[in-house]
Image (cartoon, rainbow, N blue to C red; front, top):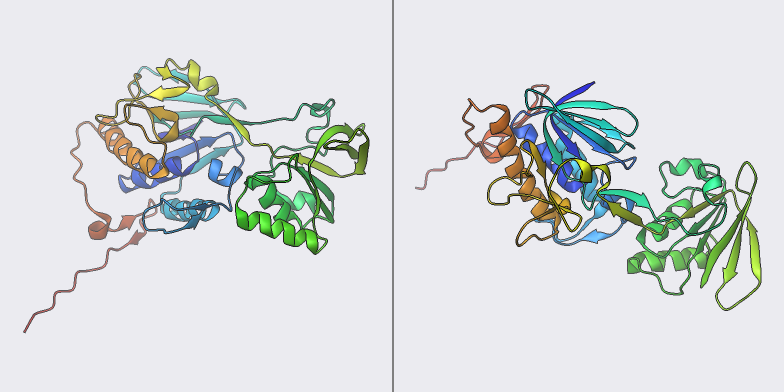
Length: 352
């Protein structure tokens, strides 16, 4: 069983920053996320999309922000349970919790912090007959390892950032990349649209619009897909090794909604006058997953909520201790292995 001080459910930016704030208090964190990699929506939906409202960064790519957060929390050695969904929670006699995932991984924790963004994510699947039969046999709804598609004929369907970004990336990996979208216009970042057009002109991406995939072929493995051009009746069959429909993810609270926590319009109600705790003592909710009067769904607001949550968690874990906050500019950052990034010493210069 995995032991930790704070169990964070959700590896998005708010959950990752909570690890840093907890680490400053020398509290150990472990993170559960249903997605196969840290970063939440930033990694899965728009890794190449610029973000403009992160303090100190006039512009930062979503994927780069995740990389920076991972680097920032490295001294605090968080644990990760990825590709698994938090399923059940059991409160223990001492006030701690045991949280078990859908794959049976058990976590014993003193504090639970739900930082699941808009909830756990499930891929939006197109209504194509026989599609589910070929899942993991050439059909996938997210890309975990691009090398799987090395020298393969890949067809991606979708018109958002994820479809554009992966088409661009796989153009240098796959033997053939086809991007199909039901409209001529794309919803993604302009520079990504221009890059796809450039790769099309170079013959590295085959672009088919407006069109949609209406059928799949293959017994034990995907062999081809049927493409229907808008306004046409005739179906075009194209041989492919992989079909990746990237139509986004549907957010759902999932099993967390059954944990006895107060829910309002698919969001978790918290007390924002103090520490963002739910109606269940010891369980907090931070980031986009929570709601309270005046709530703003911004990453920087999630960072603020994570900071106050960690302060409250420390007091719950160590009620007999009085924590005196020290600015990192004064105390530096001390990792769990004893390593320390020292704050620069003040230079006093005498004025003549």
